Image 1: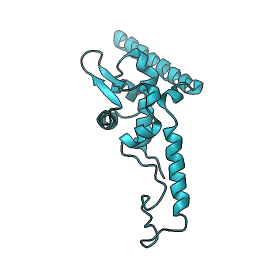
Image 2: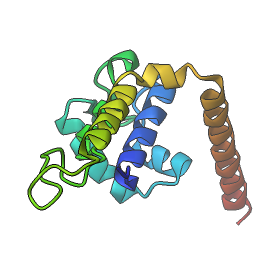
Image 3: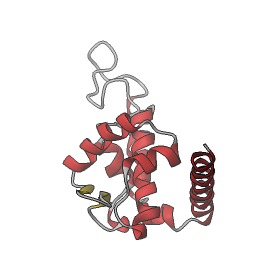
Image 4: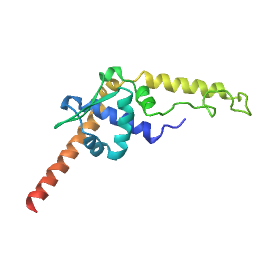
Length: 160
């Protein structure tokens, strides 16, 4: 099993939304800047997340994205599945045809691992992650760093 960038970025972006939901709709550009994820990639991910009813878009001035459900009702497993990621650790996709059309010796081991991973990720909600102090600390640092960048950019514009 290998969680690709798509799954990691989707979880990161959804966690960013959950952490900042009190600020109102969040622009993808703000997530892009805070998390270092390209805006075009976020647009692709959010198309998947919107189709799976995990986020909703808010149009107009001050628009952006919001979670469609409460953070405690969205699991990490749902986010990963929404962007077509898989937590299957088998070579056969769980079909059992991994050794010349038959089940290989380690098939059940990898199936158990796949189920364990899925169960683990299903049991973790965005709210669980938001509740972790170290995650909130990282988020606060990101916000402060971006505010400092914005202030510096404003100073440079005024002096130019």
